[in-house]
Length: 114
Length: 113
Image (cartoon, rainbow over the protein chains, first blue to last red):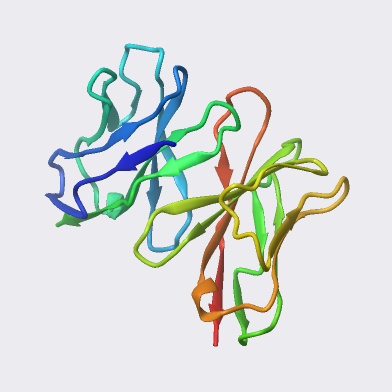
């Protein structure tokens, strides 16, 4: 069984500054993907970034980047130049390679201060 | 280029009634997933379907819950004889073949009176 753990229930960051959200996971899969999803108050689930486990290079999407430490089973999300619109719940997830169903962490609520 | 469409957006039922939640996947996607989100929690996998087949229902309660994805039409998650504990947001996601990521709908928020 897979598990995903987000140890920070809440984080806050000043607008324009950088924040890092933590995630650790456990899986018996040899090949898997890791994801960060954003859920604003509207409750949509928006894919922020995706990392393939067999790739050593950390994924980057504009102001969002990850620090993927495979041996440590750690997958943190860094948000640079934080904006008010980044305020949301952030969920880390890992997929089951057999069926691709996702296992989610409990989420981190990010607040952005103007 | 429509994404995953879920309806209704909000559904209110009384205890003992049936709830039907609908999900139309992205056009061309044949893989559908249902997840449940309780307040202040992450999403939990319920069931994975491919056209006309249930592939994995390990996350779905054995009683009162059923899901289908017919050859024609949307995927349906059906909850019979609803109880207060069924109150949650139910999300549907679809994906294409290979390792394409899942695209989520906006969810159906089910409230049980």
